Image (tube, rainbow, N blue to C red; front, side, top):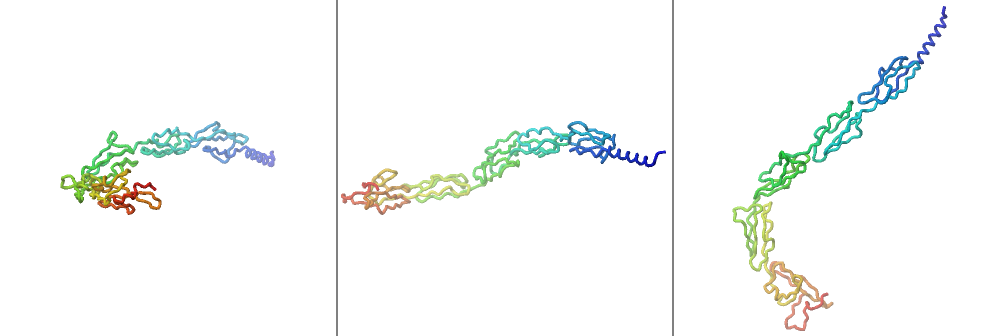
Length: 345
């Protein structure tokens, strides 16, 4: 008969042996799962490592059996992320990325003048493919520009299909008698439309006034319009102050208002002056007077230094002011020296 003490001792040894030989919970591997996953395993129980979706295994030893020693064998298994194919070069654009591995995302952008035809980003999927499909950069196009009222296109070179690419330009001009307000050139923008169109307005000018001591000629029409011209002239001894030809501008005014200015009679009978860089005698050069705008320089004496200097005088609409320092000597005062004969200061 077996002793009850012996039976109890044998049961205790058996329990200790089983406790020692139990395998613990297996080590965690990055991006891997274990089936079945328990806190302990008895010898002979089997586990299988598998990589999570989006990861692939590298190395060996995926299946393990709990040994009698209660220690799991060392595994060299690694789960690495799937790598999506090279996204390529986005023509007329750029691809921005860090890596092509799952689950990273890449983004796309187009150069100026192009737009994304497709998605602006794509993700590397569990299967190692890009989703959604990669986009393309398509050129931005503008439809034919609308033509403003009373205008026509003077420069426009569309593509096939009568469309224009980003940056293309079109130039307008107004019909006769109409003036343009705004820029005559429009540009195809990055939004696929044209910049602001100009406006053509009919412009009329009043009949130009005849200047005093002169005349004006203009088209024999009932109404004078934008770009019409008028010509001015003056009678003898008068000089036109302003342009000979004027034009009706976009604001309904003439580009200038010429006038006729009178000539100047010199009160000096005898003097040598400087005119256009040369010495001339007023009694010879200006016997019929000076024209408006002409300028001469009189010689004056510096009595203290016994030298001469010049002072300018200009004919302004019939009036010329003779410098006060100028002294005109009588022809009888032959012993006096004129200023123009004295050395310059």
